[in-house]
Image 1 (cartoon, helix red, strand yellow):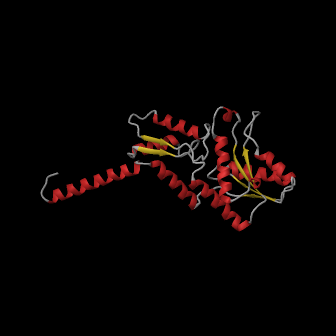
Image 2 (tube, helix red, strand yellow):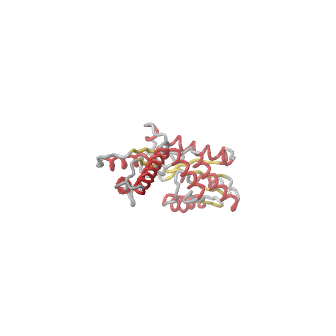
Image 3 (cartoon, rainbow, N blue to C red):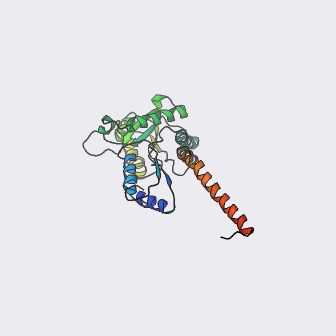
Length: 252
């Protein structure tokens, strides 16, 4: 956990103590932002600063357009629709960040919209049936727009019979989805004249997402797996040779 336990620092130290000399770090933020994914990278390097014999480190920047991630999102939504039917509009709400992050070159805004586009294509949705928004705004500075809370008011005022809200920027449910979206934003939509508000849960521990994450990890481990297998095979072969030699009278 970046801000909890088990901590980034603690787990890296533990892995090093267990003899891991090649470590892949996958921040569970699908879209890259310097204040989220970037803070994970900062924590990793801060931890490694105190290690003399450094392990090999790979950092995964994002997976916003990875087929395993998009497919998992699509399956989650389709499973929900198979039970509850489809809405008039699907709202995709992402964690918000100040607008200056975009003007300074942060790719987060573009990556969120790409995730939305790929998901819409996978679900075969027309552009007018999907809305991308940004939540969790606070302070006086301008944040990425459109704001989710304002979209709820607008959709409610248009008397939509039903909207479904999904959060592709979170792989697991948290306060920002369970309270902010499913409670606060639900109330805004209903209060302003909307009909049904459906919140579709995040990926959480769904099997297809775990398989997608596994796929992402395998691809980014690259040659490390084959190298590791070669070392294990060599060690096993050495142990067999030693055992055979001892049987034939060799001394230890």
